[in-house]
Length: 387
Ligand SMILES: [Zn+2]
Ligand SMILES: [Zn+2]
Image (cartoon, rainbow, N blue to C red; front, side, top):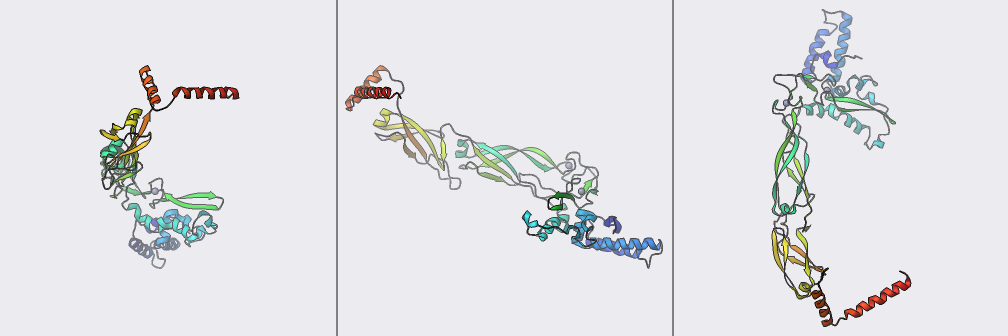
């Protein structure tokens, strides 16, 4: 079995089409056919002819060619020239969650046998990116345009994404012979695994550029910080995400750019909490106000409004003011403002206030002194029990 590179034997490029390979094979076969060959030594001609046939046998079969591109001669080593022979003796793949040996082959050879060769040079869509935007509750209510700074890979403006400096040409990668894939051997308790991954020399491109673009080091894209203005609609909720089409990484080889996803965070508000489309706040009122009722002022997101509470309003009573909440994201219909009334007990009283409160108690038929006495007795019981 020849150890020479099959492409070299036939004198074709790694990217040669099936027709190119066939044509090259015919030409070479004519040259080295032992019966027609005149110029070279008969023995050598036979050797070359064998090589040519072997090379053509592999490269004319898309599956074998794919395997060869990925693994070179190793792909056919153990089993002679029979494709896949090198992977014999594997067992127990169900342990890995594979469907079986066929799936494994598909996984290994998917890129080599079909898509991979083509997809390397095909346009690739850029990656999607994620960023966060932290909004105030006011911004949620009114909507806002946010200017966000995004680091993304953008097409290099020096080489227009080709990765090559002016006039430079690209050459087949010597590490992967142009396949863009290299094999990675893993020894595990189940045996030796050979899987393929993108070639590290050419980043899976299959070609290296002789004189890379200085701006992007030949990558065709450069990391850039850019300002992206994102329109945030009123009513959006914490944890929502906004897709900004085309603001992700640029694609390669003319591929579409990815999208930018903006994840929404909301800063806690000093006064309000959000409950769905409603705003919620607490309003402290004095005991006389709660008892007598009347108009109290309550905060809104952009100022204040008035709320009439009935006499005898209990602490923790909840009132709703229509339309002072958050617009619904889709319908735009505003939620309500929920106000919880908290009746506050005064903590500092002057003598006049104390006198009046006692008077109020007396007028209500309450004997504050007897309560004090009761407390006194309770204190004595506590003392007796030693609590
Ligand atoms: Zn460049
Ligand atoms: Zn390579």
